[in-house]
Length: 330
Image (cartoon, rainbow, N blue to C red):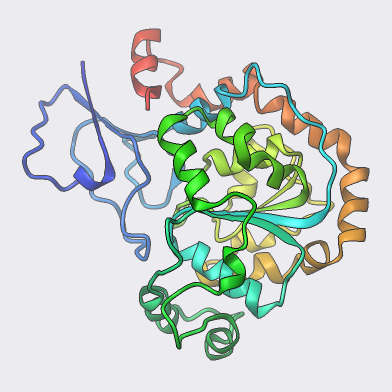
């Protein structure tokens, strides 16, 4: 058995030659973020080691959270914090994904103010044309598209609202951290941790695009380390899936019904709309945090537990240790 790792950008490369006994490992998030069409895969055994679910994927595909497992492993010997909170929520934006652009629009739309965030693009300019075009054809049932565009987007200029550029860690600082320190625990310690430790809720925008898919990265891991309530903006059944891995997603605090919305824009919108109290009222948010601190710390401990490793590696438990090591490598 041979193994070949590729990135999503190489998926359709005709120069990639595969023998019948080659296991193809996709070490990246996948596909056109504005498309939820079925993925066509080769006949080889194929592993997606960033996903635990991807709708319409062949049953022959092994879905494996290898990247998430590597991320949480970095926190094994990390001294976990007991933070104090000062704002309702946080969010991380490092690339212009569709759910992240929609999140910025919904923050404007609902006039949210009690947050900390990172904006780690190297400049403030980006083009909203693709997400605006998608909105016009998205047909959500809960969102008035015209109203959202008017209140949420500034279509008169081609850069992000300046208020989103006031960040705790600058793009230059983050750029210095990222290439040299790939250990996620170090990135957390050197600048990102303060944001999570001072906020109550994490608005997590994993790069799943509009597809009905489930993925967990350092954004979710940081939310657990910082003792925050997780809320996946645009995530399809991600709260349900995270529960399956043994975590508490706090249904008593966060309304996760958004995760079952069929329409992607609705999933993003309802996630914010149905949780406005905790996203706007810090006194209420802090009360919820204090009342659930023990359970939040249990999540923090579970993040680095062998039990989580067992959950994640269950789909490949029948392979030898050597093969499992190859499949989990990212």
